[in-house]
Image (cartoon, rainbow, N blue to C red; front, top):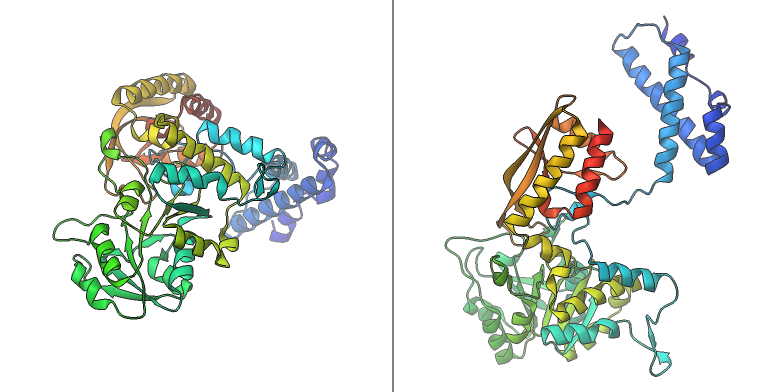
Length: 468
């Protein structure tokens, strides 16, 4: 049968639009979405058919089968058009701060505050006491200062923006001294030197990759030096023969020459992680106490809040940063502020386990064992003997450019199905109503319970059952 003759068997758009299921969808969702789905359906089947013909496909093609396939595909596409592209997923990877999955999940208090603020008007920039224009940073300034001991604080949209803004406001056209060992890439191919270049500041590298001394900084100081910068390497770890200059040493040098000191903590943390059995990480409070004039860090990493770049430190410098034109371009909106305020109030209360990131990081072996056993039992029911389910010991990661090299012992549930392999199962679970994102290790599909909530356990078993 000739190629054109086979392709002519494809259904016409008008034919599919006359089908009863499609008519019902038009009445329910409107003509535009349904028409687009029908056209895409036919186009996808045409391309698949052309590829098959190129490979020598010669079997008879039924008009009826092509029409049914196009109809089924169109109905699927209508449902896809109606659903949101950005949606909730279940993180069963074990990576607590998974950048691709939105990093830190927010605590319940933050969600409630977002809903309340977003559902109507708010006092975003309105002083309720005075009845006059206010400042959006007032909502979190007091909290951040109380928690960290800083004189003043403000927030922008992310930490790269915070670093860019500080350098633009305090060092444009002048020199910033930094250790070669701290010229990090901060993710997404963005690098500290590139961010600094955009600010108009001139980068002056001192020391070596593995060793920098205070004398290296002092030799580089001249009349054009605007800032001494320390960047915490929160997304990688140096081991062996290395050393760096402490913030206290930099502060002493800065006082000697009248030069402000900035520390970018990257994945900032507000609590001592050692008390949770985790490796030590420099806290924001320690940096402020050591005398850093400006400290910057992220809101959606170890802090466990929304994406934000937090800037705090000495009042004279924060005020200057606020007045810079870039501040308006980088400012955060009311939803981010409402979430961040709620998270900071949890820190001030001391009830840290209400923050999902903290709760996941400190999950006990007993709790994870119990969750894994419960999930395994539910999955056994869901697969109905069509495979095997096993609870195994494994390793989780913190992720998100935080605590590099730290391995968190965890429990995972392994699934092996007769119907399809691990890659196919992973793909099918990504396509379910609530996508399930796990990981594949040694030919097995794993679900790590460290990053799963009690509700997630029910969802996973339901979604696994649906793909079978």
